[in-house]
Structures are given as C-alpha cells and as structure tokens.
Image (cartoon, rainbow, N blue to C red; front, side, top):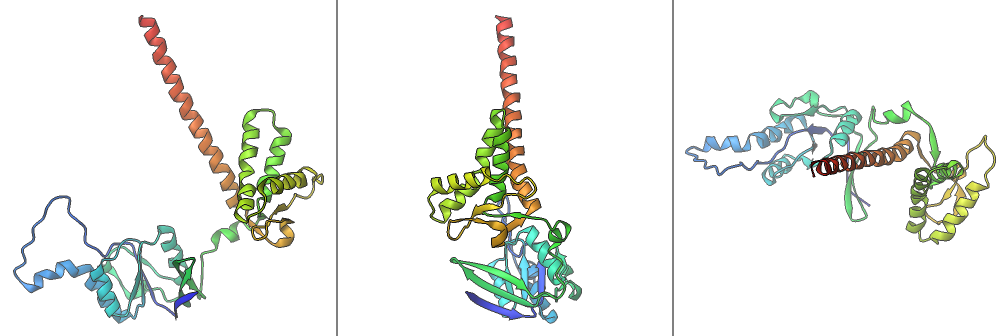
Amino acid sequence: MTMYFLKESRIILLDCSLEYKKGESQTNVEISAEGSWNWKRARTTSVRGDHRSEARRCLHRKGVSDLAQHFLLKSGISAVRRLRKSDNNRIARACGATIVNRTEELQESDVGTGAGLFEIKKIGGQYFCFITECKNPKVARNIYLNTRLVPGGGAIEMSVAQHLLQKATHGPYRALAHALEIVPKTLAQNCGANTIRTLTALRAKHANHTDANTPCTWGIDGETGDIVEMDKKVSGSRWPLSCKLIRRPVEAAILLLRIDDIVSGSKKKDGGQECAET
C-alpha cells in the first residue's frame, strides 16, 4: 500500500551523521553569547540552508537527530536515515546525485535530479522507500555483465545434489548433496506442502531425467507447493548469485576444517612434548 509519493524529487545523499556524538569523558560547556550556540547547529543549519536548491529528499547513511529533523521538516525536506553503503551508491547512480561527506561542502551540482518517482510503501507492517522512473538509471550492471539464468524453485540445487550422489565415493560429497536439498525442502515447508512426499517426488523427477543435453528444470512452486517445470513457469535466478550461494558455504566449511586441523595438531604437539618431558 502506497503511503506517500512525490514526482520529480531532488535528492541529497550524505555520508555523515546529523546528530551529536557523546564524548568518551564528561564535558562541560559554558556559553556566554547567543552566537556561540551556532556550533551545535552547524551541520543542521547547513542542510537547512540548502532549501535554496529546492531539495526535497535527504538520504543519510548515518543517524539524524531530532533537532535536525525539525529544521529539515520546516524547510520541506524529508530525511531517510541508516541507509546501507551499497544502497547509497546505487541511488547515486540511479538519480545522478553525488555522495557528500560534509554538509558544509554541499553544492547545487551534488543534488540528484534524475529520480522520477519517490514512493513510501507499507509492506507487511514495514515501510520501504522506492525510487523509480529514473531518467538515466545505471544500477543493473550485473545483469548486463552476465545474463545467464538458472531455474528457480530449488531445481538447480536438486540437480547438483543428484549429480553428487551419483558420483559420490566419499562422505563429504554425500553430505554436500544432502545440504543442497535443504533449499527445496524449505520451499516445501514454507508453502505448507507435505515435505517428505514432495521432496521424494522431486528426487524421483531428477533421478529419472536421462537427457544429458538438456538440464532438469523440475522444482517446487513456492505458491502452491506443486512440482512444476520452472522454465515454463518463468521462475529463475541469476547464475552468479546461485554460484555464490553454493560456493560460499563450501568455502566456510573448508575454513572451519582447516582451523580444526590446526587446533588438533597443536594439541597433539603439546601432548607429545609433555610425554617426552616425563
């Protein structure tokens, strides 16, 4: 449900906080003149004064204090805080804005004017910001670099698991195959299907696939829990993402095994020295 939207927004991206930092030790400040209070509002005032650039969105990677929100709201500027660094970089590429590290250095050329529509939507009890209809978006870089897709619904994981089980001669390969089957098993659980029957039927589909020229695309429909051919359902995921999801857990397991070998080797070495001394 759309809660708020604004067309042709002008966006400012900041990589600095608009809040006061607590000192590591107790600090006392004595103010004798009204003008000395400006240091406290220096960053807030600089963003507040940017209303001359007609900015209407201020996106921050860090926090925004209540005082900063007050002055921004008075100038007609809404702020979104705690953005991830990756999201900040993508918004900059999409709307043409320049990420500014200090509000004192903010210029008219740093304001992003390429955003067509700014929306705030409520999805599942949480609020999300959408920036769409950009004039010159440059975010979908990975899609252009590698356009290959693999079947979704756990089809690729089950296919790899079947190949490992057919060629498994040692325990680790079989353990990896069972670990890959967790993906279709989780899909079946989430959609309310019978997990054991669905997973057994999916294994049979992949085991009976004999055509070596075409991949087996049978997977689990995440909405109904039925076993369908995912290429006909037009459900897939990017090939680099699927490779990372398989490669990174294997690398993590290898790292843990290496650490265990180092620890166990050091313990044996210390035990051998004690025996030699006795």
